[in-house]
Image (cartoon, rainbow, N blue to C red):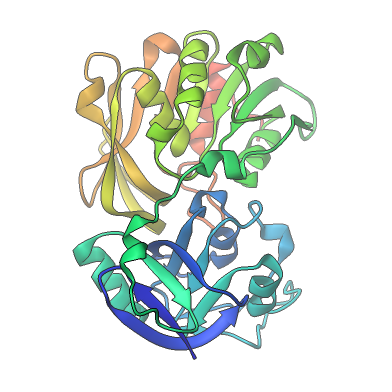
Length: 354
């Protein structure tokens, strides 16, 4: 047996899965019914212990082709893990991946109660362990730090366009999901991926047609260096920011961000388009939000969360820049907002080549 200990003192007993060893992290939950591989390999989960609200996880096994990056989460909690996956693409069972990736986890716990506690009390720290410590006060001292530096690439990477090259895009990697690159490639974009701490002058020296600011983990305000470099690039080239890139852009323009009570994580997040009134279903993974009012004199709010009214998108027309909090490149989906990549291409001077 093993235990999940919450910083509020609540203890859950379950069965150990994945890697051995104790681990402390920030406890969050995701509501996706599928896409567990994308969750496990999304660098944006750095420092977090992820709980799935859907009860059965692992039923289609592990398919490495679907990975979004290198796993960065600190722990994994499920109600039931499937030991006998059934899928023609499956390469091996989920628990084998957890062991291989060094991710400790638990199954056989009441994930409904864990999610309910998180919703009511907010995100809190937790620990996966084999023995319950007498004193758990240390849990409250944990915080996710140096998140972007821990997941960004270490050197420049080049990805060619699929078919004829129409545009060259510079992608700042704050923890980028691979499907951002693939979504650009299939639209005729050659992509140069730069480490998060790359200077604006270096990025612009390559004369890209546009700049992508990727998703990533942690508190956006921690990334003062990245914010300063984004400030230099705004207005120089068309810019499209996703998730953390959305937040960093707001901070670069003097706006503010706040930590949400329990964040938005899952593939069923409704977002209202402020221009058309249409509601899109989106995939999201974030714990912070932009304060739209803090940017009232610099940009326009373009999308809002239909559940809590938080900011989901901003446009800065004078700077040829727009950003969104959700993931238009989402896999396993939904992919309703993939048109935003086409909007980015139009800003660079053309139309979609998909």
